[in-house]
Image 1 (cartoon, helix red, strand yellow):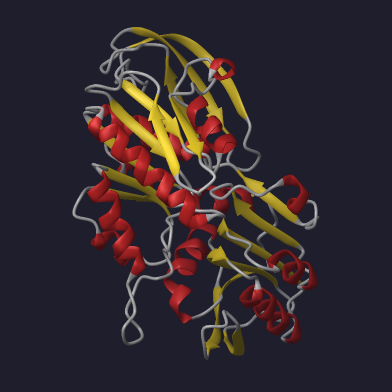
Image 2 (cartoon, one colour; image 1 turned 60 degrees about the vertical axis):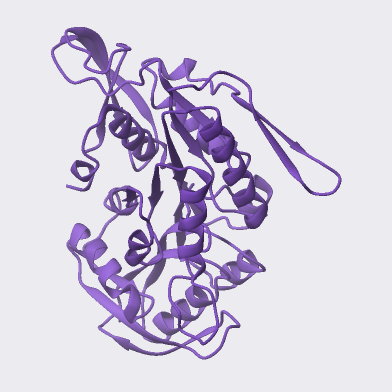
Length: 366
């Protein structure tokens, strides 16, 4: 649902303690207090043995997630529990600054430029925590690195997403928490527990605030049809599929046909990520050629590599809605007036509290 309970209790069971109930609006990202009082319930609050550490890729996003584990949102200041030193030879040193022995540690690091450096920083930090005797280490990866390398579709190549899963396990991660993988089978690469959150509720709740009476959800290709179908079902609207062909490794795809009807309708292109923006631009072109009235886009991961912002600006989209799984520098965001960024902090905050308290993650998907 859209409401999340935060408790001031510091025990794992938290019975008969004062609590605060906050409402999280997925459309606006606003958090408002509803009431407080005494109630008998299972508290999702962070206990004293829980530690939350952020790497350097998305400090603002980690701060927002950290705020979700405290009963006083204004006091959710993320403590600095480690120090990263980058040497002139490009080596990285990570030092954990406080005792984590027998602690339940959550380490957050998203995949954004420089991707390989950020991955290495995460692995070194996990290794340091393991040898500092942390009881459990959970790697929180809002955007999983190398997620698009998930299959062997050419001779003599690496399935790099599987390699990253192996590296996390070797470094010492006991479990992984991520969001909207490029392909669900990536979860099968792990020999440790791994949970995938979905941004579908956040994006669908936002679009539900719009007039959907004349709307069609559009999948960018056949591979995204199942993903987009779930989204269309949540919005109770029909779906169309673009027949897209990719002929080489240039990341350029060509849309050749459309299955479905968009003439005179409001189209919402739905996908898991935007890399160069070429697929979205091509999809927007074919939708306009076929008579779509407006074109909006809903995407989980704003990778925005290369000249993506220029490409998306040229696509003349009515609205581009993404999440904050990958940080977008303000100076880049200004290049796209149609850009809307939705917060995933409550989603990850709830999941972290559930993992820490031994509660079900699958309940979040109901």
